[in-house]
Each structure stands twice: as C-alpha cells, then as structure tokens.
Length: 406
Image 1 (cartoon, rainbow, N blue to C red):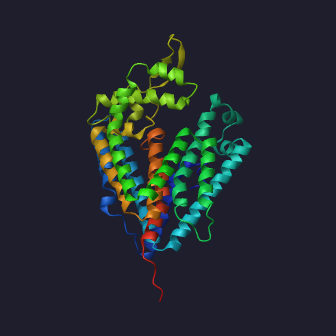
Image 2: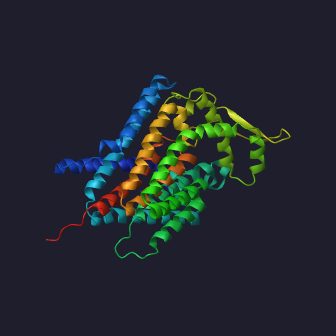
Image 3: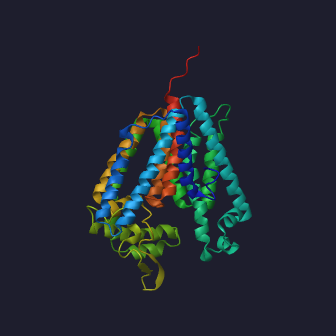
C-alpha cells in the first residue's frame, strides 16, 4: 500500500478486498478459518451501520442512504476479517516481522516515488491520471486537484508510519525510526497539507504520552475524544456565529492557509443545519444534498468589497464530527462517542510496544478526520484498516508467550 499511496490512494479499497479474497481462498483450501474478534470489538460499528440504515426513513435520498450503509458494512467486514487473519497468522515475532518488513519496503518505495515526483514535476502523476502539464503547473487549470492525489498519499504514509516503526527489526540500527519519521514529515511538508503536519505531530505526542504514562494516556485520550465528539457542534456554533467572523478572515488571509479560513464558513453553515435537526439528523451520507449546501457564501472586507466566495458545503464538512452530527444527529454522535472512547481505552490493555504506536495511529487518523476527509470516504476507511492490520499482528506477537524449545 505504501508504494501505491502517492499515485493511487484509492487503491486501498481494492487492496483490502483482494486481500480478503486471498484469505478466504486459503481458509477454504486449508479448512481453517481465522479467529474473528470478539463481538465487543465491533459492536459500535454495527450500531452505527444499523442507525445509518434506519436514517433512510427520514433522509431526502433514502436509496443512497441504504446503498451507502451497505457499502460501509462490507468495508468494515473486510477490515475486521483482515485483522482477524493478522491475529491468527502472527502468533510469533517472526511472522509479525515478515508483515512489518513488507510494510516498510512499501513505505520506502513510496518515498522514492515522491522524490521522483519532486524532481520531475509530477511526471508519474500526470501520465497515470492523464493530465496535461498545465494541470500540474497551473493551479487555476486544475493543479489543486492533481495535488490532491499526492496529499492523499502522504496521509496514507502517515498512518503506515506508526506500525512500521513500532518494533525494531533484527539487525536494525537505532536511527531507522526517527529517519523514517523525518522523511515522511519532509514529504508531507512538500507535497501534503498543514493538516498532515498537525496529524503527525499529534501522533508523535500521543506516542510519547503512551510511553511515559502507559494506560493512563489512553484513558485521557478516550475521555477527550468523547468530550470533543459531543461538544464540538455547540462550541463551533457559538464561536462562528459571533460578530466579526468576516473581519477576522479578511485580516488573517495573509497569515493563515486559505483552506483553513474556508473551513470556518463551511463549519458555520454545517452547525446551522445541525441545529435544525439535532436529534435524528438529515440522513446517512446526506451532506452533499443538504438544502443550501450548493449555494455560495461571499466574504467582503469592512468597506464592502468582495474578497472571495465558496460553496456552503462542498460534498462534506471536512470534519467528521460535524458530519456525523449533521447526518445522524445526537443519537449517532452518542454511538460514536461511547464506542470510540471504549475502543481507545482498550488500547490501555495492550503491551507497551503495541500500545504506543496504536495510540499514535489513532491520534493521526482522528486529526485527519477532524480537518480533512469525509466520514464515509471508502479509501480512507480502508487505509486505516490497512494500517491497523500490521499493528494487530505486532500486538499478538508481543503478547504471545515465547515458543518452547524441545
């Protein structure tokens, strides 16, 4: 996956399902199925899918709601099957090292591609997606959309980083992990986004916290997750509807990224729609069809002169907390808050060598969830599972007792 990340981030979905097909084929041939996770490990996901399907009853696009929840259920099922396979296959450190070694090789290959793209001006991106040179060079002609492929790739590499450096390989030098981290930071700074740098910094901070305070760190992160999940719409609604937003944005244009300033207006509109239907929401995957979402807001300076304009809600709010509230209401938010906090707290039971990268991976994913990607983007969900698979393998290997020598 790491090798494909720069050019084909959406390949995470077919990679996940092809892997499931291979595992199922091997299981049938060997007549041995992997031990699936306990029901407690995925009850929250099941409730979320069921509530999403139920929301078709009041959604403006009921067919799309049902289709989307079915797709999410299939994706979650595939992800959990691969985690089950990783747990079964990695009863020894040797098996886990094989998985981690392959992961590292993919990341290094991906970094080589990024280096080539930087030198060649995006040659591989251009030919693989059929763009002209103008698309690469001129943002007004589509350069931003081309850049999104490389941004998505850095997001995937930042997820894969944590299991890749979770445990030293045999004969590995001490500087490998910080070198790999540094290279991904450089690639993210050059090809990625500010959100990516924030995600990496938050992941590193949580890794350090888990190493220093152990299970207490996971407990704190779990509690913060639940609080932020439930309080964000209220806090943003109060903050963004205070007088002076336009003036602040106009004055901050030279110091803040334009994408961050645009998000303030997108979030303002989203919280307005949340307040209209706080209990049940507008229906699963309905963000792109919310009334008024296709209209544009206009920002003017204090003299009334036009500064810029954008859609109120382009596809999704770029904040998964707001999207879940918008589409599934307070009931959906409660499901995610409780189930998510429970799962994060469960990391406290992991061995330290798996706990720290597990919390770092969680924090990195949540940072992207809060600033960049839609809640139901299949390639992103698949990428998180792809990163969780080697981490699950490591967790089992470090928790298993050493094999007896006869």
